[in-house]
Length: 249
Ligand SMILES: C[S@@+](CC[C@H](N)C(=O)[O-])C[C@H]1O[C@@H](n2cnc3c(N)ncnc32)[C@H](O)[C@@H]1O
Image (cartoon, rainbow, N blue to C red):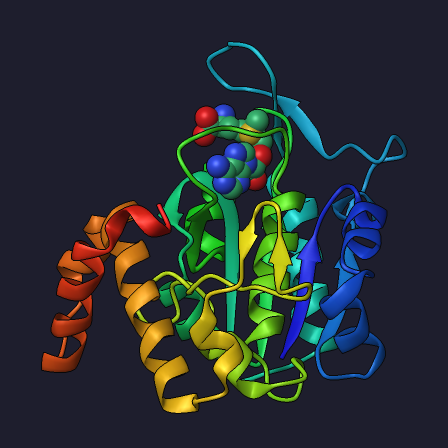
């Protein structure tokens, strides 16, 4: 999968993606990342990317033409069949794991990071396939959103994580939150590692982890549990958790 980010702050995106899992995946060629600055596609000597809003009001609006030409350049440089152009916007669909899972099959994702008061509406309707939101709040630019999307989608690409099961067990991948994790030492003044995790019985460990995942989701995100179909074993584990509830609140 490759990512092309349309941004007035290309260094911010390249730098942000250069660490950890995303940085390694890019270095190994498992995902591609390029940045396209609309300012490089302006036609006037001042390299103008924004203008006043028709009808007045505060703030500047990103112009259609430099954004359009930047997207065309990204499309022409990497002509993929399966591609989507997404504008980061607080007015879009809220990004969640299900949306990202669907998008993980695209060959190319062009992410448009807005700035200022926003983007000329004609660009959004004519060029973008979708608008995606980080949530019900407003930040100053779409670059952080683009980085979040790139990171989350990179984790879902084959061979990126050391263990393929890692992403599958993450919170939200199967409608549940992740179970709690512990590492050495076994005993701390803050508490002991649950004995089942050190006893070495893998069936019991799996069962304990499923119970914790179900219980946590029930405690913290009952809305998620309402949408999930539990099998008989999971229902039994959840009932058990409810009787032990004060242990890991
Ligand atoms: C200051 S915001 C503009 C907000 C716009 N006036 C509105 O109220 O819908 C500038 C840019 O930041 C990005 N942005 C801000 N909040 C966002 C959010 N919750 N999710 C995704 N992108 C966001 C978008 O790319 C947006 O074009």
